[in-house]
Image (cartoon, rainbow, N blue to C red; front, side, top):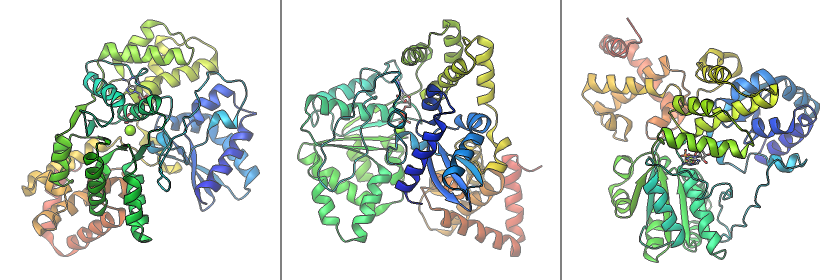
Length: 475
Ligand code: ADP
Ligand code: MG
């Protein structure tokens, strides 16, 4: 099933669900969902957030299956998979307002037409992200101020502009808001917003079809280049090389480049030094978790959008207890909203406590029979393993996740992967991501290699046992 087939099937299914699910619920819970594929008669439905999972399992699995079977009778099961990237992916997800054009709850502005050099693919700028609806606090003040300056004068003082910070803290929001801002004051500008994955795909395709020169020429016509999540360039040398060229050309001709990453330039160990130091010469700003007051302000803003008027005590409680990301904060509010719509009851402190409890429930409990891929929940434990292996062999974690092929580094790296696979509920792809984005076959190869070594080398067994004890997975 290709992307457009998947999309049109999903549109038909949503059309059928529309008669059974109230419209606000449909918009809340099916936003940014997509069909990811079909494997052996399992229809894989992608959800943009882990917290959607319980809700879909409890409320929508049956009706979704029924609707799917009316369209394709060979479907036997709905399998959910969380894919965070669906949040920013308009290629795969469906515009629910379009599918379900009943009266609009709130009016969304029209998407600006992005003028883009022919032959380049841009992700759409989403008009919901603006610099005005970004709530400012100590955790993001510098990033926001710089974003305003860049939007007002692209190619000016802050070039390149580099934003970094953890997941769900507002990087994509700011990046897209700058793009919208630039186009707002100059609709003729060529703004390209893309992710590092998309950039990489274009480079790979161009290489395959020997059209690199053409692609380069096209990138050079962009006035403002925005690349989201640049950490995924790690380990992709050819892509880095191409990016470096494009980047330099644009900077030299006074065009604006804006980049985001999950860590600071200095900590992007897998990128070449010349690229890192080039980033550092521009404007670098971080976004952190907003403090309590800012969290309350964000909640109030969002609640207004939902036309939901909550007790300030309830707001305060959510703000106090959700401390990992703004995305989670919004997710909790959405659940509160959904419950309110479903039960026609004002949320109370105790109903919110239940929602929070449910959200913190370990998703692995229900992961087995539905093929749920663990999203990020186990990341902390992979870090424990890396730390123990690093200590045991006196090899730095940086080296272990890096690209060196020296034996004294390769073996610890492979052992870390082996122990990770054995004890963590992580897929090979997810494991590979932590190791400079190695692909799943590389990880599999490493694990197989250690398995083989163990057969013939008792020392290896002893070493692994010691590490597993240190990690605490073995007595
Ligand atoms: P990131 O790209 O850093 O992972 P996003 O930009 O996707 O995070 O932010 C996650 C969600 O939180 C988005 O819906 C975004 O609009 C919202 N958000 C983050 N920070 C703020 C803020 N300071 N004010 C308002 N909304 C915010
Ligand atoms: Mg993002």
